[in-house]
Image (cartoon, rainbow, N blue to C red; front, side, top):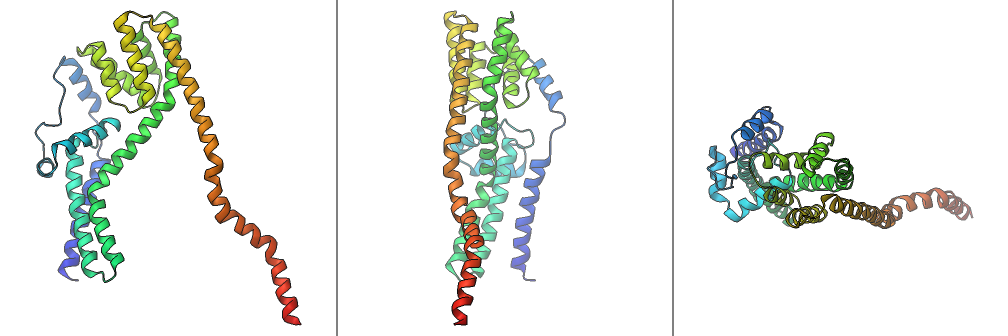
Length: 294
């Protein structure tokens, strides 16, 4: 086996193993770390300019532009900041997978004689570097969709709690404790921000910044304005819950209207040909046999 093939295999297997370890390694001390942070009191929020830990992460910080690092941090925020994939691991995985994709792409470009092989090599070179971005974007989109689906029911639960006599923070705590999913986690995190000393306005605005859902941003803005001008929070919750239910029904109707168009392609190219073969096939065979016998 040639040294080029051996080096290519090493450059591919090592980054893939590193990425697998980054995804599967879960910090089991997350609850302990959260409690420790809450007991320390308020501290300055962490920024993406902190010193990296690890050789590969340090290289990633040096080679990645600050604006792109902030973009990755935003993707991590939308994805819920999974404990198994901090920013340092993401930057390290991008460098490792970029090297693997570049080596494999150069190998395919060197041994390939057709333009398709050279294009495939160039595609692998770019794909290796952007695989972590695609994974974070996909996870963030799934998380935002789950939060959007839970929003209407969560507001209804909070409205019931407020009308029963609880305060707004108490209703948030009840919805966060009884609910499941990313929206309940975000409500709990907002309450934790208040417990460590952040003002309610800052905590609500931080909740809006951690999501890309327009409905949730509108709700947070309405709550902030109600808190500023002294408007009854039960009235705001009632209006917002009604609006969220209407928008949820409109989204369901929109998806139902798109369904016939989505079914059209498989219907034309996969179902109709089979039906035509099953119906017209025997008639065509009999016609061919009849005319061939003459």
